Length: 239
Picture: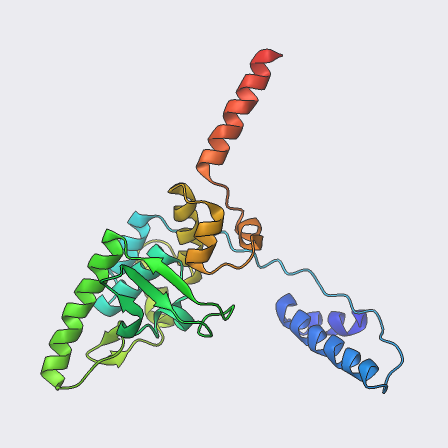
């Protein structure tokens, strides 16, 4: 199996791709053993994936990028920055039926998220204002077209689906080339930590099921760092 991984690397396959292929092979071996077709399975080791992202956005950078995007894309980007929800699978398909202005929440139904669990995010003043602006625009489009528009993020009724090219161009023009939409998710997690929310609550709001994301993102709250610095200073003074 090491030989296979070496050959795939020589073919410039990414470590993540090789690991997915080896995982499928490992699964096939296990099924073969379970069915009595095979007696043993050779050792299968996977290469290390150095795919940890370190990019973050601050509010000024987000606003700068949004200046180079159309209104519907700007709204979606800011929604991602606030909530930390996944852009293509959770934010872009969002419907008005999932927005509860009266209750003060926006919801993702069970089965529609990556971990298959439902999720809610409170309508902060900033998020409420953003969605109210989108609702006003939606109502104007509905009156002009004489039809119901179910999607929150749309352009004249056509739902937002992809924005890779416009996003890449906007980031370049804003002076932050190479950033990913997923960096907004990482930034939202950091913002929640900075706001002092408990990690368990923040994880429920963003949809992270385990704390591995914090280890991968190397996120440490500033309050924790200040507390550590105070303890270190006190210990030094005692010595």
